[in-house]
Image (cartoon, rainbow, N blue to C red):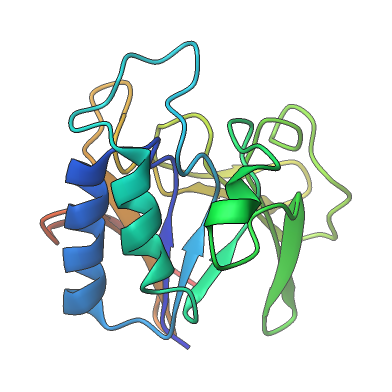
Length: 181
């Protein structure tokens, strides 16, 4: 399975459009969104071309391919306008014997991890900083960074999961980090 993973669009039509262009280039089986889709949040400046209604339209055209977990900026009303489930706090994926705990990161994170078996993976957004690091009991923490509001000098980015491993890319498709499974 080829999975595209992205987080923290925060209502930016400009960067959501670039993400949809990357989606077309990558041709993934699914698009996994790690929350904070429409609202910019009280701690963030407005992203370029802040237009949640345009983001809704772009994402809804991909509704059959989207898997999503709820971010700290999602509200119940968002489910009324989005044609795919957005309110799950987390989900589990499996990569062979390893579980991948997928969440936004505002509740479960490396400082407050969920129960993970040795070698399991914690995947979340929220920090707006790409990450790939070992923590806990030989667990792997992954973060795709942010589509619209990257922090700490990181690029506007997403992550791909393929049979070969994880690859972090700029919205233009340039690889800047990778890790084998």
